[in-house]
Image (tube, rainbow, N blue to C red; front, side, top):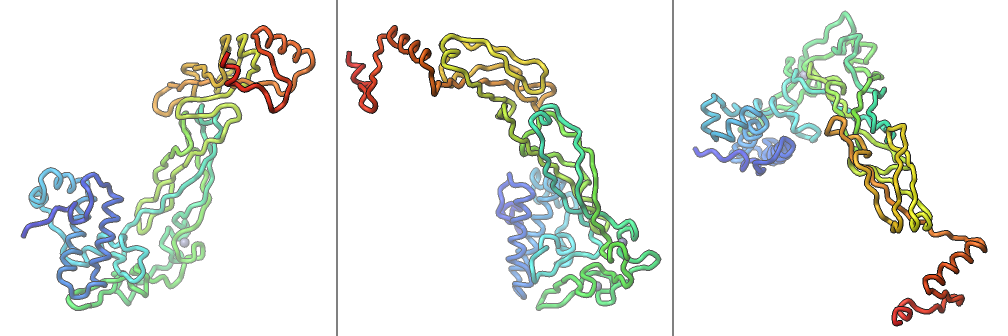
Amino acid sequence: MNKRDYYEVLGVSRESGEVEFKAAYRKMALKYHPDRNAGDKEAEEKFKEAAEAYDVLTDAEKKQLYDRFGHEGLAGSGFRGFNGFEDIFSNFGDVFEGIFGFGGGGGRTRARQGKSLRYDLELSLEDAFHGKEAEISFHRLEGCPTCQGSGAKPGTQPKTCGTCQGRGQVIRSQGFFQVSSTCPACHGQGEIISQPCPECGGGGKIRAEKDLQVKIPAGVDTGSQLRLRGEGESGENGGPPGDLFVVIHVKEHNFFAREDDNLICRIPISFVQATLGDTLAIPLLGEEDTHEFTIPKGTQPGEIIKVSGKGMTSLRGFRKRGDLYIKIEVKIPEKLNQRQTELLQEFAQTEGLTLSKKKGKGKGFWKKKEH
Ligand SMILES: [Zn+2]
Ligand SMILES: [Zn+2]
């Protein structure tokens, strides 16, 4: 029999990743699920085909073989698909998680990784510039220290579930199919705890506060994520713990704005400074010294002065920094005293400019141009 291409089976492109594979498989598996297609041979084949494709594409080693040599490559390595539904459910039961009415749950002792957690950390721009050793404190579910996560009162043992004989699943027949679903008596645990641990109430986990020192590298920006492996919630049935993701938020600075590794600041100057030129000093981020710079004669509003290498520290390169851009804003005085008014009127005369006193009905800009 000719086997179909695994990517085609799932309806995904060759460039897709694990997330797409899982979404596609979930969709197919639900569509062709034996609970929905009792007695349908074709659905059964499709269901198995999708499981096999998903199995291969999400296994780095098998995927590589398949990508290079196709189905033959896999057969050569001794790969065989699934035996039946039970085999599929015990491997991929988690795909059906959270969907009401579908069994699957998997074997009773299936290890599962703990949940990953997110911690939002706010930093000042200065902290982001220098990097920082941050102290964070958060809550997570941890294995109960009193019962070592078993849920049973110390000195007692959980009993094997009589309904499923410890398998965690019950199997019922439906036409040609045998459909397994989570045991209702033990909720898939395979064991019944008759005397629960007083500390965790039998759940095997407690909510605990955790303090951690986190090293924040210089140059982080809003949206940067640090992954602390194994610092999330503890796993199920001996599975590994989840991870902790620290998500960075950099607060707005009152002088510097940031664009990637560059910094931008706005300097308001008077029209006199812009006209005659001047020398000014501004503070620099992360430095003691101020930076002196010259405003050339005749500087226009909005002109930008670039200061190389005085921007933000870069997350990408050691001791590399972006640039600083000084944006010049020219302020027009809103009020003048008598003397200043006279001086400016005199200045206007030197330019051959006569100013109309009439409000609203001045001579138009265009008219003046005609001469
Ligand atoms: Zn406990
Ligand atoms: Zn049971």
